[in-house]
Length: 300
Image (cartoon, one colour):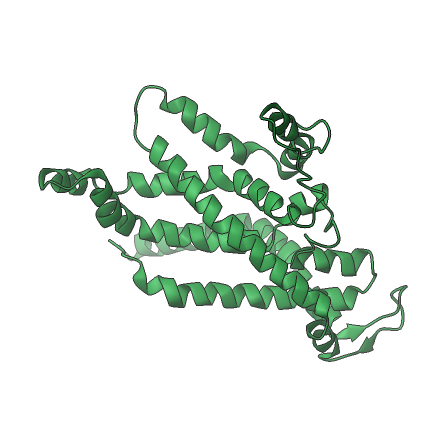
């Protein structure tokens, strides 16, 4: 018995060591591409350097104070909040609508699932180029359709008033598939017996949806809402490919301001401070969501 136990312990210890060996590459990549860049950004944000990266000197919180005193930063923060205020409700509504259409099996549901989930498989660069063609002010299909209806063409991406809402719609469209996948899983986890019992008691479709489906779906909605807020506040690819922060900086959201300061204005320490301020803002928003909405979630 003792011999068998010792062999089992040795076998278990060896298994744990082998698992650790298999995990070491993943841990190494995580440290190299996630932890080290954050520490490097923190170190850069506490220093100053000249244009050519020489003569670095300790700056303490100087870069953070300078960033917080810039009107451009606060303007970008306001644009970021406006962008998120359009993206999050729109994508959540469209994703929930798509999930409600496809979470049950019926003839032709496979086609709808393919159409809704297709946006998830399209890379951001490809989607941005396609939307750029679609919204072209001269030959784009959007303005062609408006002309066919007798309406004037619109400067979708070249107007300071329309550029940000247009980018928000493009971002929401690109994320509908992933949102629908998560919400479909949440809908399929709702027990059918509860809905059938409500139907027997005389509850109509709207009553079942608002009194049963939504409360039981609240954990998934809370998770999706949190992910959407974080994603919309860090959207970059479509902005870079379609507007590059213009026109007249009307789409210069906070993360694109960091990019401009680092790679065009060559103020890397200031950009690192701005990036860390954005990171702290994301943490604060996530904590605020947990505090305000987490208590209202109904966990089964």
